[in-house]
Each structure stands twice: as C-alpha cells, then as structure tokens.
Length: 184
Length: 250
Image (cartoon, rainbow over all chains, first blue to last red):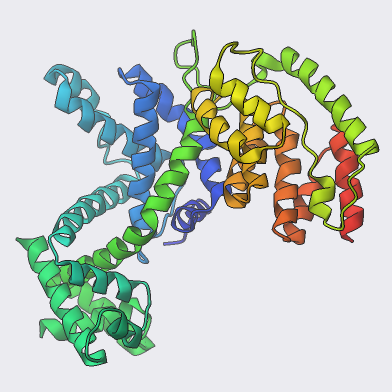
C-alpha cells in the first residue's frame, strides 16, 4: 500500500508539528462542527470530539505498520461521528441513536478497515494504560527509561540495580507482569 | 518459547533483522495467529510507552490550537462555522491600526535606542489599549498599564487571565505574545504568534513580524529571514522594518 500525501499529518501528530496541526484544524474542523451541531451537540462538544479523534489517530501514527493510503479528512470525520454516536447513546433515547447508527459503518467505504484498526488500537491503549497503572513504581520507571532509549548501564545506576543483567531480568519480568495484567 | 518470541519481535521492531529474517517473520505473522497477536500487543506496548512520553504535550498543543478554531459566536447562524475572526471588527481595527502605525513610525524614525543587539534594536512595541472595550475591568487596566510601562512580567500575568476571557481578540493575543517574548518565554510566544500569523485578523502580518523577531531573539537567523520575507509590502511600516532588518542580517 502506498502512502497518501496526507500521511504527513500522521507524522505531524507524532512530531507535534504546529503548522500542520493547525492545517488539520482549519481544513477539517468546520465539517465536524456542523455535523455535531446538527446532532444536538455544542461547539465545545465538537472541539472535544475533534481532539479525541486526533489522539486516536495519534495512536496509529506511532504504529510503524500503519500507512495512510487515502485522504485523512473522511477518516477524521467518520471517527468523530462514531465518537459522538457513542456519547449520545449514553444519554439519549434509543430511537435517535438508531437513526444515527446508520451513519456509523458503511462497509463500502475504503476507510472502514482503517477506522476499525484505529478504534481497536484505542481500546488496546486504554486497557494497556489500566494495566500499566497497576504495575509497581519501579516497573513503571524501568519501562519508561528503556523506552526513552537510556542505556542499561545508566538505568542500573539510576534505579540502584546491581548491573546490566539485573536491569535486563527485571525489565523482562515487568513486561511479563504488564502482559498478564492486560490479559486478566 | 514465549521469551524467544519476545526477543525476536523486539528485534524486528528495532529493525535489527536481516532481509531473510524479516521475510520469515512476515510469513509467520500471516500463518501463526497466536504469534501475530503477540506481535500486535508488543507493538502496542511500545506505542503506549511512546505516547506516555509525548501525549501530554501534544494534548496541550491541540488544546491551544483548538481554542482558535472552535469559537462560539454570538447570535450565530445555524451551522455556520467561522474558525477565526473575520472582519467584524475591521473598522475599529483600522482606526486603531492607523494610530498604532503612526506611533510605530515615530518610534522607527526616532528610535533613540541603538544597541548592538539587533533584537533590542527592532523590538519596539506599540502601546496597547484594552480598557475602551471593557471599562472597569481590573485585569484589563492592570494588563494595559503594565504593558505600556514595559513591565512585561506583570503584563503577562494579567494578559493571560484577560485572554482567557477574550480569546477572540487578536490584539490581546498579540500583546500576550509580546509579553511572553520579553520575559524569555520564547517558545510560548512563538506558538501564540503562529496562531496570529495563521489567522485572518487585521493583525495577521504582525504575527509574521513577531515570529521573525522571536527567531531573531533565538538567534535562528535563517528562520527569521523566512518570516521577514513574508511580510507583505502592503503593510508599509512593518515591511520597511523587515527589509531593513533583512539588510542587517546579511
């Protein structure tokens, strides 16, 4: 799959590129605002939904296997719609939701699989987060340090561990525990 | 066994496998569902740790950008979205601008301040006037007085509060940016000026000019030049300043 030129926006999310992020807002927020408002939402609802959608996209921007192969606008719009439908489902009558529900999945859309991937990743990230919070502080520090690219030698000093091997063993144990918590 | 998978996946994700190994790895992903699940989870763990580091900053960035694009309008028409201020206030703006431009012109011509530091030389800020809009507003008065007396730390404090109440006023935004720049919060200043530069307000070109000044202060002369070249000729005073600074930078 070849990357669409809009893939640059994913990179911008990952790198925090202000200029491109603003472009995302200026290009795609008006459509979302008008749709959310049409469906009983306020400007501030639209703002929150839009930001949540960008964070959901950001998850996938960090995934080396994810390539955006079509324009990002439709994707953002659909993620926002799904999020808004989920929200009003919590507080509105079933009949209204049913009408909106039609807008949710449209398997004809080329973006359907990407949206599914993005939504799955979001759920996985939430569960990983819940599991991570149950880890000991030492495990959290250790995993963060490894991810930051700090050398095992420095980590050993920072976290008062005997040697590089201890760091390595502890790290594996922490990863195991994290996985178990995730699955439990 | 599982541990071996872990190491193998880690190596793949770090790009440490050779071509042959990558091929094997990919075909295993297709054939072995358990392995593929393990891979997905491990990848998501890496994503999590990266996000854990960077997401707070991204979120606050999006928050501040969002403020400018989701503006609740008074008496708004249905479904009409105006991401950034348009010309509503243009006339008042023009009056204000003419006055400020005149002051700026005087400052430029008779600037007694000759410093070796180019930033100091070019960073002459026009006074602001906020109180006409909201008389009796204490924060506004404090901000205005402090700003015009060049007490930028106090100005920054009050403008921050006032800006939250008047997020649509580019004049306040500009003053906030200038105060941030003057008290050394350069990055914050840059992000504020970027919003102005990006928008459509009458102060758009001031956003461009102050971005140039910010980079000048950071001694990033190449970036400063880029923005200086973007100041349009129609903005006469700024254009002349920009051209003159460009010459000084050569």
